Length: 623
Image 1 (cartoon, rainbow, N blue to C red):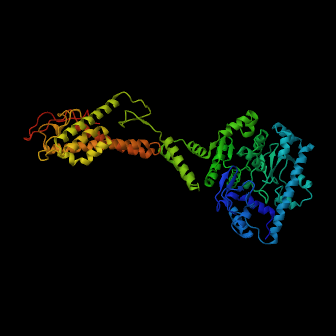
Image 2: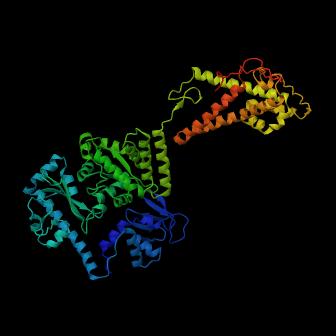
């Protein structure tokens, strides 16, 4: 079985070393590395370090050192090929078959690097020749300096279809096609893929040329503005990020990596002094590219144009990243002013303007919420339900359980606050009208509130006086009265006095308890039937039992209503329904209190059945 150095390098590049080590060893973040007590020898302080960027671990105590394959063989005890097979399965790679063809393919990939390297040298030389005058003029018009041109390897592909083949005569035609430099069409002679284009080399993390990007210099019908190499044995656009081999070292100084949309944006930022920028290969950011970025920084910053296309690209990146999220690893987003790309921004406004936008970047969660919130006007309950459904559908794609739960909570809180903005009660809490005005210090609602409070106070004084006249009822309602004393401190002294003095009375005659002056306000005995002379004793007892029940349950209703109101921000729908139910119950209780304390209560009917006075009305005192 032939495992070429190139294949093994690719395997190591696709696996995050710390994620493998963490399965058996507890790691702690130490700057840009991870540290732990060494698993290969006993120690009390950490001297074992893992560096994902460099792809190795090292112990400063016992000198253990190696890459991810060595970890599997030394720490896990696996044979070399078993370790390779397990890692290859995790990385989605096929282990080369044990036949001579696999060895030949590995050799071929290595030789293709020779082809792309030679092509790059020729493109650079051509741009410096008279044929490249047009390309040089274009770079000058874009403000790209000669130093930047050399740094990024700008070149030029001539317009003729066979120029590259003629220049690279030392390589077989097949190799030029396999490297993506020539196009093979059935029934036609092969021709150069890149013609009359400004050429940029695409390099892997080791700096080797694996493909090319070409920008058109003169607009032609049907010709794309940018043209990339096709996928080859060297180049996989879904796994490659332009300029990563330069941006990764720069990110260790700045602590960030910036993802922009195109090559020229990367180069413009580099020329402005922002060296940690990369670009995908003309497609939306892929899952593999996100994982690749997380090996270098925990929160890369995506920078998109402010137009609709840029926002669609941002949302696509959000959707790709959500299933991959893990603790401390996410994305941030920058929205550029509409009509400007990073190249325009730094040329027109300078590096400081770009730096300000980067410092004010938006979190992934904020981007998700803003995009979905603004996607459809919320004109109806159906629109609101649609927003909620979209948000929860995104949340359900998150694999990490803790992050999924936190996103669900945060997005539902934002949805509730936005779809059901909290409104203040008007009228001092009577619950009959909503409004945003906090000033309810005047007008009829406050008068109504005072009237209801006075009615409850009058009912309490009358109830205490009634129980003093019928002390046998104090023991019967002992638990209810004790609860009332607990929830209403103002009522406690009078209730305690009743309970302390019932033991000394003769129950048969229900001798009245004499209340001390000032314990409660003297009640108007004409307002309450159970205090008026001539009231049937059983009717008086029943009325007193209802009065005690009302006095106990009314504060409980107030507490329940306050609790429902406090939940309004986190659960507006449930809190609103609970408020309405409690308010209906509260109005019903206020009405019963009002009827019991009615100023127009009729005097009790005599035992002979005749009537005296007018029937009772309570239209002005009900809640």
